[in-house]
Length: 111
Image 1 (cartoon, rainbow, N blue to C red):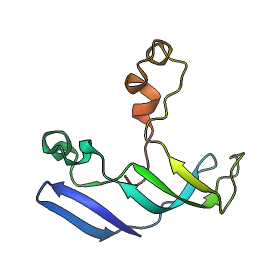
Image 2 (cartoon, rainbow, N blue to C red):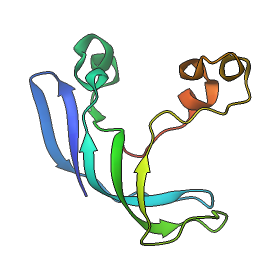
Image 3 (cartoon, rainbow, N blue to C red):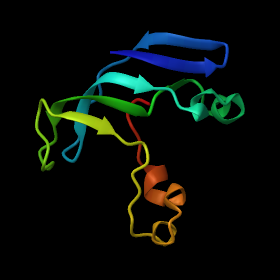
């Protein structure tokens, strides 16, 4: 699959990566559109994580569903939120969802 890889603010490359293998509780989404967030181009923030696949605000079609996933099927159109907090921890309960440990321990592969 094609991905945009950030090396620095003057070096962003289109590269090819293998399609990820999903787990039992995951979905594989074929991306149709993807936004670039303001944090994607803040060099002071991204440079320490480079090289990195850009994009975490996406929409697309589900092409594979893990065995334990309910409520989704192949062909469903989805929007993927990049902020998916647990809504149970102390941060979420006080409304500070961006501090949630779950939010910071999950990711898109790649992106």
